[in-house]
Amino acid sequence: MPFSSLGLSPALLRGLGDKAYPAPTPIQLAAIPAALQGRDVLGSAQTGSGKTVAFALPLLQQLESAAMERPRRLRALVLVPTRELSTQVGEEIRSLGAHLANVPKVSIVFGGVSINPQLLRLRGGTDVVVATPGRLLDLVAHNALDLSSVATLVLDEADRLLDLGFTEELTRILALLPARRQNLFFSATFAPAVQALAHQLLHDPVRITVQPEPLTQPDIQQRAIAVDAGRRTQLLRHLIQQNHWSRVLVFVATKHAAEIVADKLRKARIYAEPFHGELSQGKRTQVLADFKASRLKVVVATDMAARGLDIALLPVVVNYDLPRSALDYTHRIGRTGRAGEPGIALSFVSADSEAHFRLIEKRQHLKLALEQVEGFEPLQTLGTAAPTAGGIKGKRPSKKDRLRAAAAAAGS
Ligand code: AMP
Image 1 (cartoon, protein in one colour):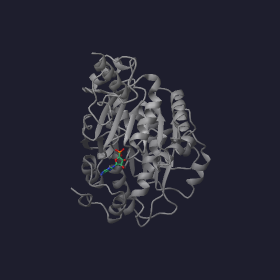
Image 2 (tube, rainbow, N blue to C red):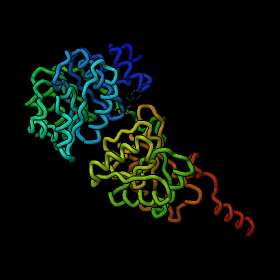
Image 3 (tube, rainbow, N blue to C red):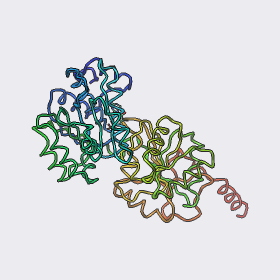
Image 4 (cartoon, helix red, strand yellow):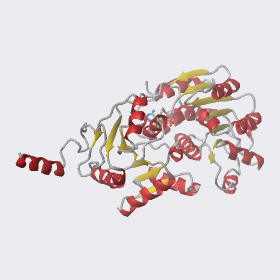
């Protein structure tokens, strides 16, 4: 079913046309018509399912049909757990609303940076705010925002909002909102606290469940390469150059490792930057923007920093250090193969991490052959190394192997 049959306005269909999305995703198909009717929505959906568009379009259509007011009055509030997500969501709403007759003002606000520029930008009012909860309350305290005119409230990634300890802020924000409003509630998981919040917030919601894509989905090719721990950076460099990868997200275990690996890649003239929690917000925003604009080839990130990071067309994710848990593995590889784009998720496995890798595999119901790359064959023995499935040149014997075989043949 095309977007044009969902009841969206011509201006929004033009906004969608700019994006060239082929067709609505399941969550969009279910949520958009319900939200356009003014219903509350309870969506169970993962990042990557297209949920941002699912709430952005109805929210914009309601703005389009509301009378234009000056100064602008806040009509839609989107609460998100992280700074990165606020920027992604805000930009998506802006671009989808770009063809509206009265282009809405979408303000993105988050903590960890000076409040003054945000106060300035909110002068003259705003139509939409995408915010992390703490900073939203600060802005309300500064009288820069008035929540009493909000007609639509979106909670995006509600489970993470609660996980990150925003319960008290949420309660305070809810108390400032008008009782009559539409609520669009999205969460990947429904722990009891999330259910309680949904119950408190929603009136007779339309419930939508989109199954997380199975991990073995064909558009994420999962592979594992056996390599000695000390040669991982060299191997990474080799793979990036040999495969002409345009954009690679590399996961490491610590901030320190992120700095070191990025530094080594830069020395090899591969433009790489670290991405971790100790960087300033300005730096993080810059890295993300450069990565999105393809000015940057490699981002070397820790798990925490990469949560919520959504970059369309991310072809390769590399587990330089293995994730701590099977769940982190899912989060990491979910960064590639988004919304139907193909992706590769590579894990580096060395002698000391092999047992841990097998555990992750078991939890994921996976069985990957450990590939070897010519010139990077591990010297430390890996117990169950198996020949490669192809692609990376594992199956071919290395030069050394061939020499050894020739010597053996000559000696026999
Ligand atoms: P989300 O679930 O909002 O995090 O969406 C994840 C990704 O899906 C984003 O990169 C969007 O650009 C992309 N996306 C959203 N809707 C569609 C669609 N209908 N078709 C293809 N990609 C989409």
